[in-house]
Image 1 (spheres, one colour):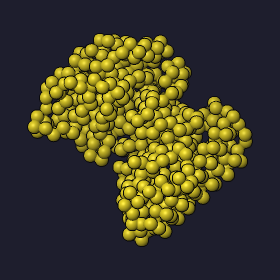
Image 2: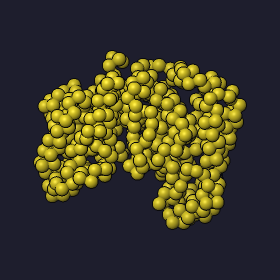
Image 3: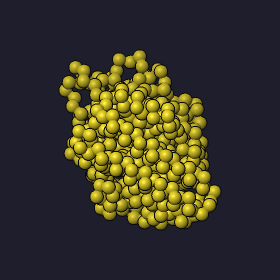
Image 4: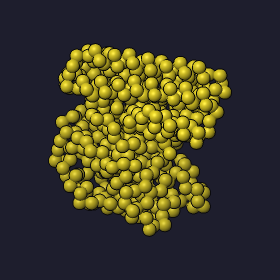
Amino acid sequence: MADKRMRIAYVHDSPLHASLETAYREPSHLSSLGFTDVVLSDQMSGCLHSITPELISKVDSAIDAGLGVWLMDDLFTLPADSDAGCPGLEESWELTAQAIRDVIESAPQIRGLVFRYGETFSSSNAALKRVDLLRCECIHCSSMDGVTRRRKVIELLESVVCREMGKRCILRLWDLSEDGVHADRMLQGKVLPKWGGDPRFFVSVKHTMTDYWRHQPWNPTISEAGPPRLIEFQCEREYEFIGMLPNWQGPEWSQGPIECGERGWTGLANVRPLDWAGSWILPIGGGWSSRHASSELWADMNLHSALALTADPERDAGDILDEWLRNNDFPMESRTLFEKSPELILRLRYLDVWRIIANQRWMPSENWFRDDNFVPGACAQIANTVVEEGMADLLRSERALATAMARSHLLEAEALPECNHSDFILNSYRWALSFAEWTEETWNQLIENAPLNRSESRLLLLQRLEENPLPPLSVMD
């Protein structure tokens, strides 16, 4: 039933920067938007071994606003002075089980707990340590393969969180690489049967096959049997300019990714979980950069779509966009321009020439540009390879096409009727053109100087930024 699907809000802070300040943390605002639930602790702060009075106060405020509250942590999160952490040591599992009991006893008003594995961030609490239970290869783990470890996670969480403590539990299937469980039907078929059938146990996956890149098929495990399933959506795509440019996701989420040949075949309108528990929605955040967008409007455009499609997955994406435009006093003439924004993102961020050469799903285009950074090693590899393959002119023409498209979109933006958002709209499209022109010239120089090593590529990029700054962008160390 649509009215029973959870709509969970989660602001994803960067591991390298201060916590994001945003209205999407305000319980009353989330409730007014249509969210049913909120996640109040994340990979950095966590909740195991660290329930504070401040966190309890946030929990109560969210509940007062009508939201269900979830607390999240990584597995394993353990006391720093403990020798545990190896999945082959029973102490690691016992400490985790007791920490779960302590959390629920300290905050019995929460709706449930969220856990993930496959990626670990250092805890902001120096008294704690994080250990990736999939990567330990010590003698104690010699008899535990990946399937056994993953199955034991399900057994522990369902037993302790759901059956013993009576709370809901979400396991985010977060090992996202091409050999991870996140989108591997066969691997999930070996792991998820460990679920004992408790309806309070859920799994959550991204809608993309790997991470939030384009050229990603709809996650093929979304419709697999097993525990009730949530689907995760990121409103500011971390690899696609983190909210600085319009990036309308409605059609992709509704009908599937067009660049993968799936439009009309996948997406929520066509492929949903057998037992769809709802959506896990990141209004803003994700990635490793600080916040640069001067407004949350582009994130809000996608947020409106995620919420609307969770309520009615067969709703027309164009109608959803029209509704958002009216609600935010945009001129309706802007619809056509915003509908084309995914095409502009594809041109600006991805390289068709490299797709022909490498055809990568994990890290497409080698992540030559990530968040707010140029990646010198990836730039060198691409430039060297296209020269070796005799495809340099194709890359040059591709970047020229990106510039032409960005210029055309800016002209359309400048022709829109004036509104309260005009400055933000125009600044977004002006920046898109600046990025296109800057990168067109940069790729020309990279190609002209090929072959390059990483250090030479980095120096060239730094010199380009010194001569022609493009705030807020920089070069990765």
